[in-house]
Image (cartoon, rainbow, N blue to C red; front, side, top):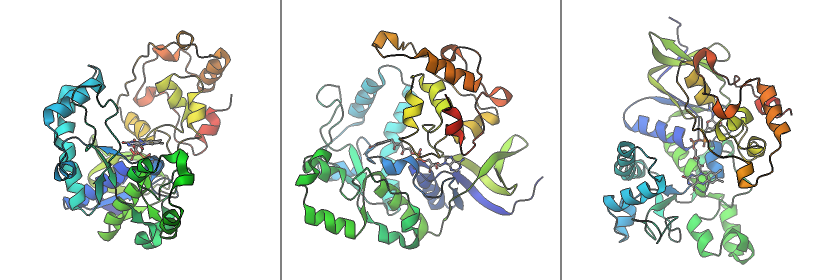
Length: 358
Ligand SMILES: Cc1cc2nc3c(=O)[nH]c(=O)nc-3n(C[C@H](O)[C@H](O)[C@H](O)COP(=O)(O)OP(=O)(O)OC[C@H]3O[C@@H](n4cnc5c(N)ncnc54)[C@H](O)[C@@H]3O)c2cc1C
């Protein structure tokens, strides 16, 4: 048994909304969590997002007079799923998401209903609603984070100083010239943050107020296992950080990992383009860490054929990808391995450069 230099109830990898929300929930439930973030700044891919949270029959909508029913939410989601959903999981999401929203609001996170954003298939799908199900975080000032203000990554291509509702009401992102310039200037002066960035800042503020430990530049090498139970994480330095209750992998997607993007998406060129859109730290580490312990990754078998959709398909690109990764067999038919058979490389910081060497 290795001795731990640090010990917590829950060790959470990742500081996007999944990791921050997990930490806040753990703390509220009386546990001692720690958030370990790989990147130098917090927020992951979440800060680039619009931060819209879709919750049917939520209490905020009800309070503003927008009625909704469980049956309507279920009908709409079944429509979205196209018959390809696990009904038990769907029901749990429908029943528990309003509860989760209320829970985090009671933790101090301020949310609001977004007017102007209808359900995507409003008026076309059963159970769809015009208003009430899209929620966003209220604006929060970066100054409320004191010394942590600079430690959250701020996207420069998203106007986070306006709410999604305002942006729509003001004519959208292409009408920036018509937005209220004085208000925008004042918001920027106060470093007001909304959308995905605001969501991250609200959750971070709640964690900091509670004294939860949040650390950046954390290089986790492995999950530690004892008697078939995950007991913590081993850092690249060799340090063991113990998790008395468990480890939560909230490491986001794999958009900056061209090998995984290729394996899972099967779209020629997609991986290369995606690596420029997502933070470099999103290399699918949670999938790798889980698979190294024997977790099995499933991949949908696509019936998609580039030629059938008229997409120009460059077979040299595919073969370049394949030879770089030495998978040997056609990816479309390749089962995704696990344990020792796992085909993905370890999480080298320059991984995407290796992957894009074609
Ligand atoms: C442009 C855009 C708009 C979007 N708009 C919406 C929207 O309106 N509504 C919606 O629901 N969704 C939206 N999404 C999707 C949404 O942003 C994501 O699903 C969500 O942010 C994922 O959150 P996460 O916490 O799982 O991952 P992330 O926010 O990506 O966080 C993962 C974190 O884990 C860290 N990490 C990675 N590896 C390790 C490791 N080994 N150790 C420690 N930390 C690690 C990363 O650095 C990162 O900080 C949008 C996405 C985009 C790109």
